Image (cartoon, rainbow, N blue to C red; front, side):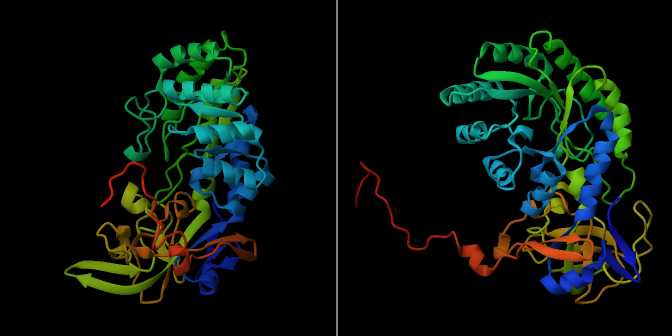
Length: 433
């Protein structure tokens, strides 16, 4: 569940009307519910409680420092995919022994920083990465804990851009090669085999792909433990789906009931890398109507948020519920809305700039406030300054209080890193005119 609700004709986040926040900070603006985030962490822990999992929040979903501080207070770990994410995690006091480092293209500098910090393990995704990591660890006089990321060749039936577990994916190594790669790990003194990891995709809304992927991964891990008694972790990744415009997604307990029996009795410690399922429905994007426009039979509602603020609809064909903040509440997820359809579009100079196509929406007028729901994951973090648009602020709500946890960018911010009239450095041996 989330803590956004209608009351007396207004949409609230916890105990605060969203219109009050929009009046205070302007639009577009991202708003997050602290209570929702904490509730989702609790529900995840309770669902998989029989295995006492190490929950490593997937920071790429939303890396705002205020949110990361909440996770540190809750005792979770972090799943990171870059040196920048490592720096953020350490800045908020994260325990390095609860950090796993994922990603197919880690640089030597990133490896060295993570080794120096003492992260729990690296999810290794190729033979060449293993060799570079081993050499980097040896150079720094330390040993790298690793988990082999395997590709179980399971189709999660999600968008192809967020499908990561099929054989043709760039992620992981196939099961046949994983066993051989494990043998190489055992030959290298500067690395230690600590786990097996698989992550088959994101926004997965059925249980069956997880069952197939985890079953194959557990089988490999149990077999490898006969050679490597240091192998203690089974990392199942993340990817649990959430409701956007449809309520038909499994509950966390449904996933757990199917997956816990696969690990029970193996002696393997479960590691999870959830992101979207924790923060996705904890956030909304607020935007104001600028204009209404008709073109033939087509109706457009033009708002002040665009694809640079929320790119999911354009990039992933993501469908977010959009509804006025004031007035009658929307239909329940999955129910048809008795309203005329329109395209909710932004001000960016691209045909692909939209927040929703053919979406049912009550009549609105200039200045009306709309909420784009389920925008807490892969929202602000994927925002850009395209068309020289400052990125919006982020706001955290805690009961009857709210605070800006990232301020709105200014036009000065947009040019702060630009260098006008740079000092030009000649290249030795280059031709001169």
